Length: 323
Picture 1: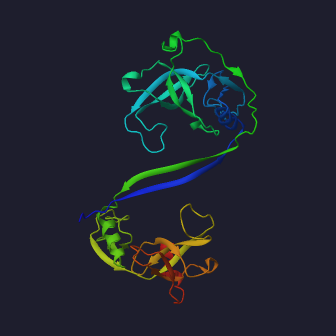
Picture 2 (picture 1 turned 30 degrees about the vertical axis):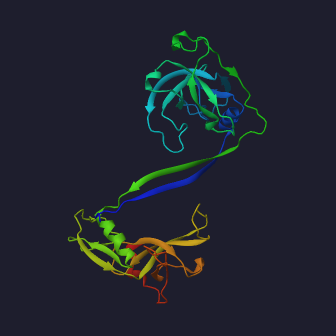
Picture 3 (picture 1 turned 90 degrees about the vertical axis):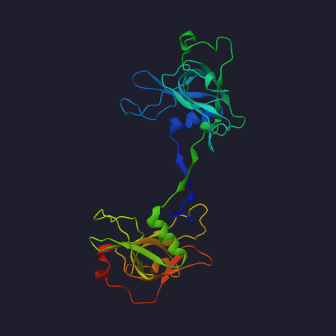
């Protein structure tokens, strides 16, 4: 068995935001196969449009419609697409300056290989079959096979942006963008020992040879003295609530009813508070100084939550340095 544990982890949450008039018009326009930019104070057409001038920081609202084809200004080949990326087969990330725009838009280019991509090549938008008012309404870019479309940037026509009022039927006013990070976590030797001990219903920390403090969870080094910690010390299992918060927003895929309490708990014998959920008591009765103990579920590898022990509350002076 390897001394160091590893585990695949996923951090995922939906990011929801409302849209101002500029972003609303841009995304609604994509739904209608229209690409909008905004005119900055120096006369440049910015695509994607920003709500504030990149030079003066003043609010800008002068929308214009630009072309659906453009020129690749730079690119990078992606040989191994990942989950959620625009294309499932190898593609190029490209910055495309659309006709009539002065800035470039980042998206994917569907090309058979890196030899088929070059700076200055002409490309055009491939629209998604189903459009909802999101950047993914542009499925990707593709090489422009129209007459004259294979020429370099200097050979293209001088397309002029046309003013646009930004008005659409049923405008998009908000978006939800899923954020996700997949990675492999390796906790290191010290925390691997800590996690294995939890599976045996034990909590271990490590003592600093200099200041003699016991840290839980252990990190392999003292955060105060900066020296390595190797001496293992079993602490707890009981402890004291030093501070806490009441959670009122239910997390996705978390089977815990709100409101609930998340607390910092100073385990007996430890000099650093760890955090855990408090259960077995109404949320409005949790308090600083409450004495608690861990509760393991059947076959659980770590405590599911901490519950009151029934002991008298700890005196503030006994845990004030850990608040």
